[in-house]
Length: 356
Image (cartoon, rainbow, N blue to C red):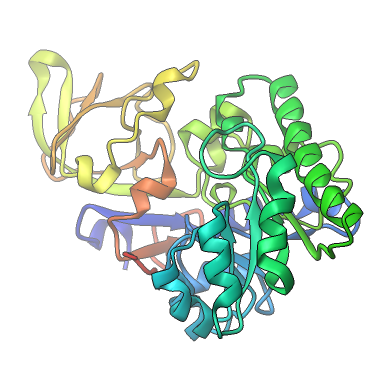
């Protein structure tokens, strides 16, 4: 079976590029002795990818309880559920042996009182402005958790706003120092801190020091996308996952073609709008994944229609591939990956888990 035989739209994953991206991140973390890579599986959501990214059932990160159950059933036991927990989810979290995170006193009290085997990390905010408490407030939550405390957790999502190597290194150090400061404050108060966990793909790669950190979480580096390429996380030729699509309409008067990959197949993420190059909703590539059409950008999306311009007048039914802006969002609507390895032959089909 080849790509020509597949129904569209569907996901194509290049195994060679995936392995190259995994090795690049593993080498980056290996520069920091004693620091463990805990891959975030929210992008891939696939057992087969986890076997490569976290071999030997190594530690992983998940973003949904559906993922946690899926990976638990697949053999993974050391998982951090990296989304704030509610009391209603604690029974399932305990059954799966999850480490959870919290930035809330009531949630911390519920975790401390729960009869199951569950531990939690205090989430701190180092500048993203999403979840987490300021580093100086971690101690109060740690005291509520008591023996259920596992450590400190943070995520420098604001690294995605960086536009230079200097920006990334500064944010990476801000992330590191905030997490290390919070952990040291707990230790100074006589509280043991086993885990000091941080991570995003950009800061994981740009961090010059990870002193005081025990583990790094990163996920999008596995597949890459057009936005990460502009952050310097990887090159344009390191995007491992693309969407296979078919030409369903030709509009030569406006130099465009219509594809059967619209907002649902690609997502409507516009992350590159604020980047140096705006790729609209994606970049159209040829069937081999090469940019043979130049800047053929997916400029408009409807539910099942995508319009690419400027584009050559391809025949109806012609198959192309589209590189995504945000690979995590794009993959979310698809049930599986069709594996290739530098060519058009489909060498395997890997499943993935969806939903919550």
